[in-house]
Image (tube, rainbow, N blue to C red; front, side):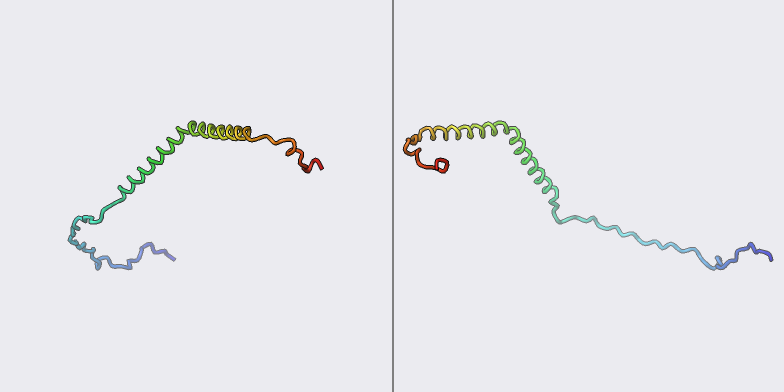
Amino acid sequence: MKLIKIKPRLVDHALLHKPIEIKHPRVKAPPIISESNDYSGLFNLIGFMILCIAGLIMYNRWSDKDKIDTEKAHSIIGFNQYVKESLSQMPQPTETQKSEPDINNL
C-alpha cells in the first residue's frame, strides 16, 4: 500500500475574497470639563497640618520632660514637709491617753 503525501484541499481559496476593511469615521470627543470641585488636595493639606501640630506638641512635651519631672518631685517633697509640720504641731498624747488598753496589753 502506497502512502499519499498530498494533502487534500478542503477549501477552495479562489472562492474566498480578502476581507474589505471598513473605515469608520473617527469622532473626536469634546474635552470633558469637570464641574465638580476636587477637595482631595485640601483634605491632604489639612491632614498634614494636623500631623505637624501633633508633632510640635509631642516635641514640646519631650523637651520639657525634665522640667515637669522636677516640678512633680518638688510638689511631692512639699506635701511631705507639710504633713511632717502638721504632725509636729499636733498636741502630743498624755500618759493617761496612752494607758488605754489595747489588744497587746490584755
